[in-house]
Length: 150
Image (cartoon, rainbow, N blue to C red; front, top):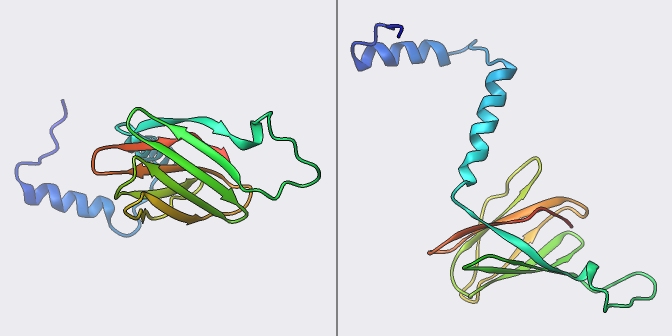
């Protein structure tokens, strides 16, 4: 094992400052490793699977353009996420109802979490046609929904 001369904290901090200072270059391999490590932040969240999508409901017969909001239901062991998707907006409820927060993730970004009300309801803005998933956190659990296109 190589010895780097880190005999005390000050020596280590000095070398870290030099490595992270102005002009420090990060190559693509390091960036890819950082992105891969970042994806592990959700490893403790349970996956909520899509169990209902009104677009796939064979019982709905529509003439012309549908004007009703799209309904989606995601289920996990401890939490259900019910959604209505319209152009530019997602309205939802966590079941069982209660306090929590919901963050909207897209393929390129993550929005800050919004709090749910006491009934577990929330509203999020989204771009029409965006591919999204939700991270829902309550005092007892965290779940992440499947990816869906709005």
